[in-house]
Image 1: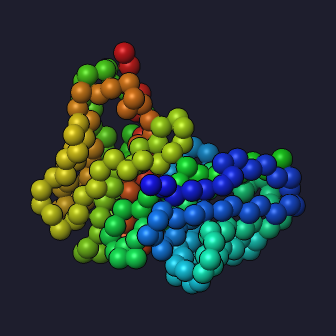
Image 2: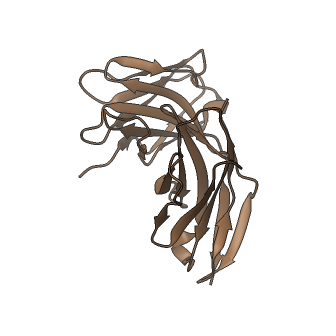
Length: 115
Length: 112
């Protein structure tokens, strides 16, 4: 009974490169959320997606960041032209279709380090 | 705007004793849920307990219980019979719509 799967667990990029973070939701879950945790801080909401739709991206930086959840395959959080300030842990969470007020189940996160 | 505030950056407790972690929140919504998540050194996010705002009864999960004071917008976590494995960062969070809003966290250290 696999939980939320994120890969890679650790990702190192140089400034200016692209980072792609993947998230496969729990079986039966169709809602995906991305959160960012900066060092010594709590998690901050970035984006909420359902299959092929971005529902709420109010927490996403306007530039360089994008997210998708295609009909087939995992959700992808993409960061273009990374900068040092993008270093953080990125968590994905998922919830079932009837997700109103249901707890979100988290993956183990991807630790992104920018050199 | 919804906010969640944890005013205790760090707490310590002796093994087998009881500790309470504080959390306050602010929202204008009438229907919402509150959660406590635990983040051990492995950095996983583990759901500890949840509270439905419309329920008067405080939630309990084994050694973990909450004191939910809706009028005061307070949602504290009590850990009884603390164990070394409880050492972690604890986050209070509110679910408003589909968005979790987290507090800054409280580091709990359980000492033997």
